[in-house]
Image 1 (tube, rainbow, N blue to C red):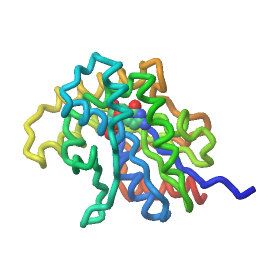
Image 2 (image 1 turned 180 degrees about the horizontal axis):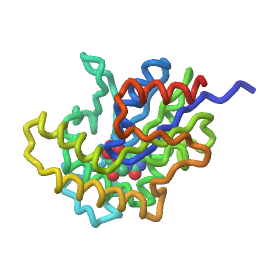
Image 3 (image 1 turned 120 degrees about the vertical axis):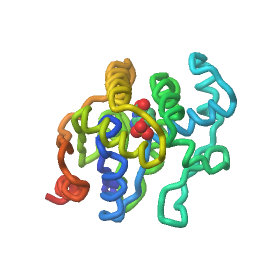
Length: 223
Ligand code: DC
């Protein structure tokens, strides 16, 4: 039997730098990339378009099954996400989509419905999978696992800069409160709570530059 396609799982809370790091590491390795949060966000966006109530779990589960989610590379090499055929990349990144994704991600049937779609990304020569439960639930047999963290204050600061660059007015206090609330929700939900996978290498990115983190993650795959 041939060896299974290798997977590097990168889990951690929002703002830990997972997205940026995972994309760069995937490019360096020449591996495929799964942004699993984008799937939850895509369902959140589709639910918003259909005006669904975020408390109506049944409707959200149906919406998960009915939503077509596609990924393609944009002209600048960036990842673009198509929801039911429409480019929803920018909408996916809004706070509204993030909040909807967080609520939707707490529904066990939604998580189950997205399992196979995530596993389908495992194709040769390898996959970098970015999310919350990549190493614990989706790819428990992955040979390489990383758990990225950063202090809540640093994550709030990174988010503050991003939003300020976009011209969105927010306060540091408000952002920090939001981040702590989302951490607590993601860590305390009964299904697939955010926790490090067994054997995952912990990397604290507080005070580290992107390049330094990329090198540390690459060292996990090729020590
Ligand atoms: O990583 P992100 O901010 O794009 O994720 C959006 C939401 O989806 C976040 O609240 C956590 C949830 N999520 C999850 O529960 N499991 C994943 N594998 C990825 C994201």
